[in-house]
Image (cartoon, rainbow, N blue to C red; front, side, top):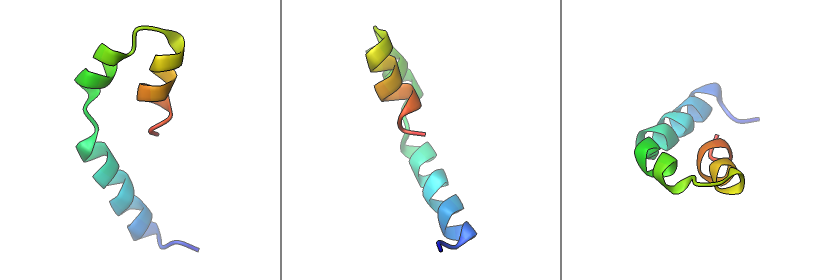
Amino acid sequence: MANIQQIVKEIKKSLSSFDLNKAVEMSDNEAKTRMYLVEPF
């Protein structure tokens, strides 16, 4: 089982590299919205 601190570290790393403005800009339909905004989380 993964260590909680390792999980938190990975989530923080993912969030810090996530470009919300670019994801919103690329999301022009439902499928793309799911791909860029929902699935990364």
